[in-house]
Every structure is written in C-alpha cells, then in structure tokens.
Image (cartoon, rainbow, N blue to C red; front, top):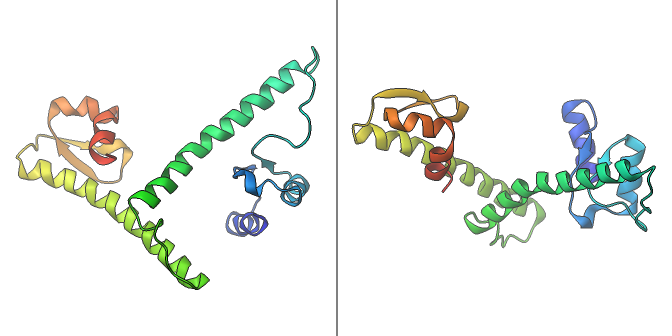
Length: 168
C-alpha cells in the first residue's frame, strides 16, 4: 500500500485524500502511515466502537455514512475485477515469474479495453449497415459520434439503451 501511495504522489504531486482498500491492507502499519500523511483509509476504525451520546451522535452518523460511501465507491472497482476474471484471462494466470505475471495481467486488461471499444464501434457500424443513419448524436459524452434513429436519441442520452447495448 505504501508503495502505491508513493507512486500516486510521484505521478500527481500530492497524496490522495483517501485510499479505498480491502481489509487485508488495513494493517496498523498502513493505518499509521496514512494518518501521518493525512490520508483517510477506508473501512471501520480499529478497537471498540465509540459509545453513542447526544454530543457525538452527529459525528458517529457522519462516520457511518462515510464508511458506507467508501464501500459504495469500491463496488464498481470490484465489479471490474470480477469482469476481468470472468471475461478476461485474469482467472487463469499461470505464469511463474513475477514480471511475466505482470505482463499477462497488463495484456488481459488491454484486451478488455479493446473489447469494449470494438463493441462501441460495431454498434455504430451496425446502424450504418442497417441504414438507420438519420440523426448524429454524441454517445454519452464520448469523443466519437454515431448516427441513430431519432426515437433512440432520448434513450441514448439517458444512457439506458447505450448501457444495454454496449455494456451487456
């Protein structure tokens, strides 16, 4: 964890405000390091829960909400890991050497990104081949445009149809 935080600081020039980690990384050493650097470490604090009184009720509620929000922020990340294991090759890494394993992981992530990009391109090509080109629209703020039927424009702007077709 410490090496990753230092890499973050070297890349961006400052420490992150918070670090969202699994329980295995919430060790006392990591907690001390994050506290010394002013970084909030996600998860419950160590020790007994503080007793709720009238004075600290709002503070404890805010802490519980922050812990819950940290958990919600991790859900998409964990989902991508599951996707990478299920669809990609990350569940079948059989490399023996550490640098080879890193290469296999990087290639698996590149393939997943290419897969998503190709699905977006194929969606646009499908509309082109089917002759559905009537209205240009920028799909969900993406840098490329695509032509779709006018009645699909509202659905795509809401991202509901776009997510169904692209992220399926």
